[in-house]
Length: 224
Image (cartoon, rainbow, N blue to C red; front, side, top):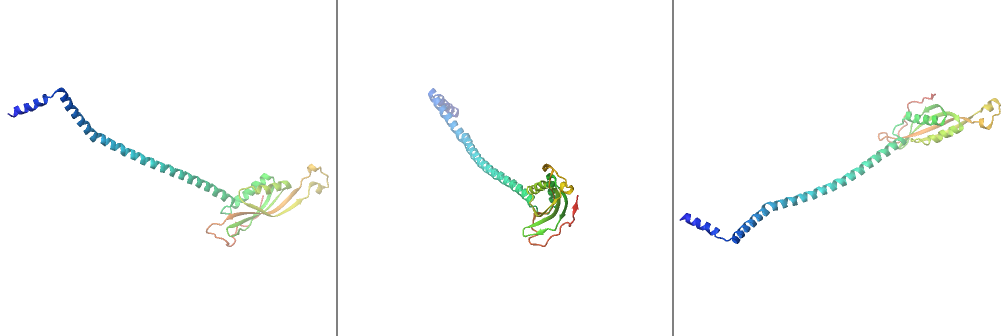
């Protein structure tokens, strides 16, 4: 009897017409497609949405990083500018006496000007509130226009150097010594000059201001 019932049920499905079978197949296909959409496509759509959100987050982070990079480059350029300014200011007003560099600058200008630096004597520093004077007594000799060129050249060096207490002595010319008459082109004024060249340096934090005078390396007159 059971076999007969199964056969009867199967024969019922087989008894459907072709359009009915197509309809049943179509319904089955739609059900499978719906299940695919819900199970697979829905998951893919969720992943795509998550990736879009992640992409937007990364773009926001990239924009922030680009802005931070601009600020960093600006700070880096400002740091380089300040370092260059500090280096330039240190050349103008160093925080140490740097007597050898001071003398070297004066000698260089003297050589370029064509005069002879006959002696130089470092003197004691003179501390002020925020800076100290670094004086040096100089004696030089040369033609008058060369001396003028020397003073002008000293004003062009990086470090601040003041020329004070200038005393100029004219050396008798050859014609005056020998009572000879020279043509105007042969007559040249030679002079000897004594002056005080004063450089400056910034006081360091530990030195403070208005302290006692600091002794120099020694008051030694050097001659070439």
